[in-house]
Length: 462
Image (cartoon, rainbow, N blue to C red):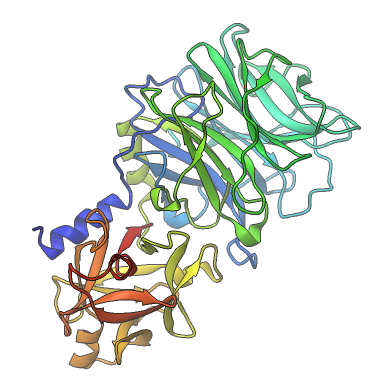
C-alpha cells in the first residue's frame, strides 16, 4: 500500500502523464521519437471571462490528457491585423523547427473578410520569432482554420484553409517552402456541400482529411492516395457528440495501432472537447471515448496537436512551467469537476463560470503535512472544510478544528486504484463523496455499493 504522500505525488504526476501513447499530425520526428505531444489553442468561456485570442500551449505524454503551460496564459499574442487569433496550428518543419499558423480573427464576430493568416517561427516552442501576417488570396472571403502538411511529391508545405467560393465554403490550398512566400490559391476540397476546418494527417503513404460537413453538422474522415487537390474519398458516415461539433483533429499513435479523432463543441457556452478512437483509419469504426479517459485544458478551443520528443517535453515544461493549481474530476460523472459556488462545494459540468472556481492549490494538510488541504485559487486563504459533514469553502480561522476539518488523506480510488479518494483527517471512517452533486463526508468501506465508491473517486488533473 503506497503512503499518502507517495500516492498524492503519484496522482499529481498522473495528472500530466498517462499510459496511453499517442501521436499527432505533421511531424518529421520518427514515431519512436514522438513520445509526447504539444497542443496549441486559444480560449473561450461561456460568459467570456476567460476568453483569450492568443497562442496557448499544453503538453501531454499520451495525447489524451493535457497539462496547460504558463498557467494557461498566452505564450504569444498577435500584434497586427485584428490583433487576435483563433484556430492555431503547429507545423513541424523538415528541419525539425516549427511554424505556427493561426486565423487572423479576434472575438466571436465571423462576418468579416480577411485574406491573411498569422505566422510565427519557433526553434522549439520556447520562444516565437519572425511574426508576420501572410497573404493567401485576394478573394472577398475569409481564410479560416489554416493547417498544413509536408507534400513530398511537391517538395513543399500545403497550407489548407476554409474560404467561401461565392456559393459555399470549400478548402483552398497554397503551397510554400518557407511560410513567407505563398503560391497561388487553388481549390483543395469541394465535395459539393459546405465544409469547414480541414485537418490532414499523412500516414503510411496516404493522406487523411478530417472535416466538418456544414450541411449536416457531422465530422468526417476522407482519404487520398497522394494528398493532391480534389483526390479525397470520404470514408465515414458522419460523427458527432454533444449538440454541435467542429474543429476535428486526427491523432495517431506512434505504432499506428490506435488513432484518435478530436472535435470541440461549436458553442462557447458548451466548450467541451470530445474524442473518438479507432484501430483503422481506412474504415468507419470510430467509437466515442469516455470523458474519463481524456482531459483538455480549461477553456481550450479549436486546437492543433503535434508530436514532440521526451526532451522537447522537458524543455517546454522547464521554460513555461506547470500549473500551480489542479482540478478534481469526478469518476462517475467525468464531465463534472469539483468547484465552489456560494461557498458550497459541488460538482458542476464543464465548462463553468468563473473557470477559477474549479481550480485548487493542493497544499500540505493544515493539521497534518502528510495529508492535503484544498485552497481556493480565486479566494486565497479559503479552504474546503466539512461542517456537519457537508463540504464548504471557508476562510481559515486559525483554529485546530478548522485545520482538522480541512485536512484529507489521499488513498487509492475506492472505485479505481489509478484514481484517488480522500479520507477525512478527523473522521477517518468517512470519505469525500458527492451526493446530488453536493460534496459531503460519508462512511464508505470497500464493501460499499459500487455507486457509493464511484461517488468518492476523483482524478487530480490540471
